[in-house]
Length: 172
Image (cartoon, rainbow, N blue to C red):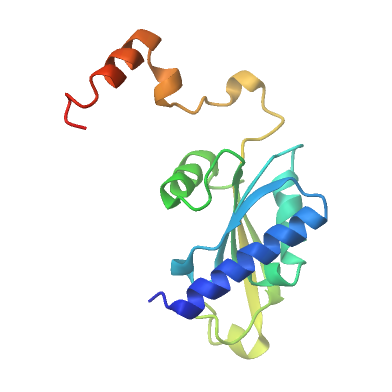
């Protein structure tokens, strides 16, 4: 269960990764380590300037002191709120291709306290990383990238105005 140590370590790790990525010139908007993931998950929102950028950023993070424990690294577009797990799950479910969007890196330094390690991996301190690339490929034509549907772009203005005008009478 989440305790005060998981919360403080998650916040510290996220802040340090954010600071270090920005100091190296990466256009990172936000970093969040959900306390429920006991520092094993790191979610990063970023501008994506070129094809292959998510992998490049992932390897840079894994090479940083605080990023070495980003066993599961989720990289999302800059419009995803990394602290909103609903938005993060949406990004994983809609933008991460099940084959080419999940990158596994084996034989990285680990430690014996990682609960997911096998009995063979623990004494060798071997672990693995997983990148979930939840960014749109930059080499796709613009018209191939799905539009993120919202109240503002899915409904005609007159419907939006009517709904907003009557919102309270609808019971909301």
